[in-house]
Length: 128
Image (cartoon, rainbow, N blue to C red; front, side, top):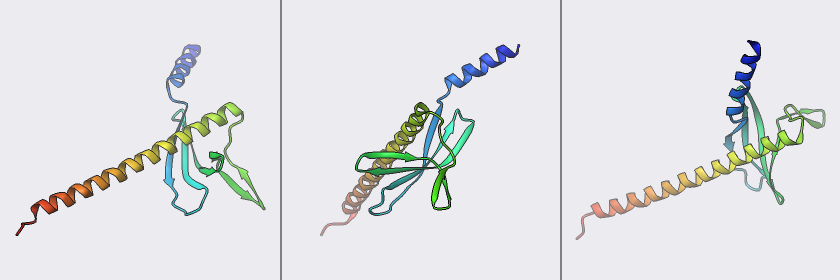
C-alpha cells in the first residue's frame, strides 16, 4: 500500500511545475547592475527568497541568497548540480522578463488613458 501512496505522490509532483519564480521588486537605482529581487517556489512546497537579478555587459544573471561572513559572502541557498542551477536561473530570468513586459504594458495603458482623458476633456470644453 505504501508503494501505491509513493507512486501517487510522485505523479502529483511530476504534474506540478518544479520551480516557479516571482519578482518581489524591481530596483530603480541609476547606473546599478542590480535589477530586481526574486523568490522561488519549489513544487509549491518550499520557498526561498533573496535571489537577485543583475545585468552586465554579458546579459542577465541570477545570484542566490547569501549572507556576509567576515569579508566574504556565503550562499545560504544553492542548487547541488548544474542542471538545477540552470532551472532556477531560467525561471527567475523568465519571471523578470515577464514583469518588465507587464510594467511596460501598464505604463502604456496609463499613457493611453491619460491621452483619452485629455481628448475627452477638450471635447467637453465649450468653444467660442
